[in-house]
Amino acid sequence: MAEKVLIYSRFPKAQMVRIGERFDLLDAGGKPPLSVFSADELKDVRTMITAGGHVLPAEVMDMMPALGAIICYGTGYDGVDFKAAAERKVVVGNSPGANAASVADLALTLMLAATRRLIPADQYVREGGWSDRKPSPLMAPQPGNPGRKVGVYGMGEIGRKIASRVAAFECDVAYTNRTKYDELPYRYEPDLAALVEWCDVLMIAVRAGAETHHIIDAKMLKKLGPNGYVVNISRGSVIDQAALTQALADKTIAGAGLDVFETEPHAPDALTAFPNVVLTPHIGGHTLDSHIGMQDCVIANLDAFYAGNTLPYAVKA
Amino acid sequence: MAEKVLIYSRFPKAQMVRIGERFDLLDAGGKPPLSVFSADELKDVRTMITAGGHVLPAEVMDMMPALGAIICYGTGYDGVDFKAAAERKVVVGNSPGANAASVADLALTLMLAATRRLIPADQYVREGGWSDRKPSPLMAPQPGNPGRKVGVYGMGEIGRKIASRVAAFECDVAYTNRTKYDELPYRYEPDLAALVEWCDVLMIAVRAGAETHHIIDAKMLKKLGPNGYVVNISRGSVIDQAALTQALADKTIAGAGLDVFETEPHAPDALTAFPNVVLTPHIGGHTLDSHIGMQDCVIANLDAFYAGNTLPYAVKA
Image 1 (tube, one colour):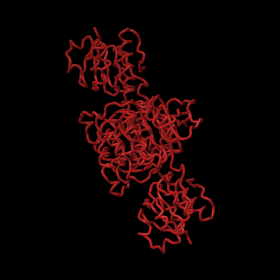
Image 2 (cartoon, rainbow over the protein chains, first blue to last red):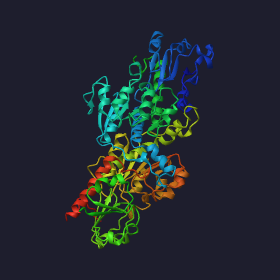
Image 3 (cartoon, helix red, strand yellow):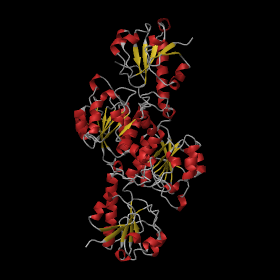
């Protein structure tokens, strides 16, 4: 008989098809498992699949007393209470790198679209402003990419792929990261403030967590400056969203490209009103190949766990 | 006294400021010069500035009997009647390469936005579909870039910059071009049909003219296939726009990114109704640095002409 796997977060059905072919899935669909399944149904559930950003506290773990592994679908694992997991001897796995190209590609899409004002441009054509030769202040020429200073915050797999793509646009690339990598052909800045002071476009590719919470605040946005753009494909928590909204309103910065938000799925009206932002519904890792890669990691982790082996894609807390 | 220069096409005033500081500009603003200025005012005009795609026939040249040089603002010169110019001993100049990075960047922006469905994604967030968790078939995951086959049609300065940018996205790149360049690290296809048969995304960077008119027709679009995208930043005339509209309607291809159209400024309603296209109002060369580069070429051409020298940026017909 197939092993039981609890699905904690709300995933589109299509993403679980391959996993469902090998395991007996109990889909809680984003609700507390005990509100969907009985204690009896959950008592022998040993593994669960979660979206890394979804808050997963001790009390949810305790709904499955036999729980041994939490498998994050994706790279992130910031929602998992690692202390609680460790106390319960629950291991945590993720899908490192499987979505890196997809996320980096969206970061570039957002950067290019925001700096080139693609959304107003498409709208100008569709709504007939162009054929009517209506004045379009939003269509005034903007700075181009050659020589543009792009700062990458976080130089993991996604940050590296962002940097190599940005470099192809003849931009200058710098980064900051806990570790300096001498093999990388990019300028290194020792801290975020120096990077932000230097760059015109800030690409946020840092891992979310307590130490990066609201690290992009009003002060940082002021450093980014009136020609500056911020692109976030990491987690909404990294940016103080109220400060960002204010900075866009008073033109402290020039624009933004955002795939992630503080409270998902929700982009506040104050943000969606700006023409100089590009907004996507957390689709960074959302390509067919990326999903297959993430599913491969999930399946490999589950197979290893049930075989009594260590997870091939384990998260070290 | 400053020399007179006729401005033939309709240009935003900002683009002529630097040129106006050195020359006495007579701005016809897109109208036949004789409908705006008297024959007497035009009789000693020796140079004119035009947008390369703007039709410039013999009869317009004859409105300025002293005409000696036609200076195209931009790379293109397809609107100029070269035979008529040669008969009148009028030289033609352009701004080669000055806008190549800007145009290539827009090509990538269109490719990324179309293949990632950026316009519907932004709309889904702005209109509240995401927060309401409305089903969004348009947001289904699409193929990603790694391994994507991208064909570049035309390997001039713009085509080369498109190819190097596309390669950074881990795509496979091929091209077709009259000349095969052995130094380029991309696969060469001897003709357009073979390139289109091979690729998933066709990037049109070929020079417009009689031999490329409607070369992308219903047959080519069928070769591109149901997962194929076409991106055009060259000239609208290269694509049979009616065939493209039909191919989008019956899903012969997956989508398109278009900066240029058959009759500008006009994108027909049949095109603007598709959610799987991205449309921009011919802004390929439209960045601040690109405009400065093009103005540098225009000024250098005018200065040379009035000094009695050959044009530094001359077009060989």
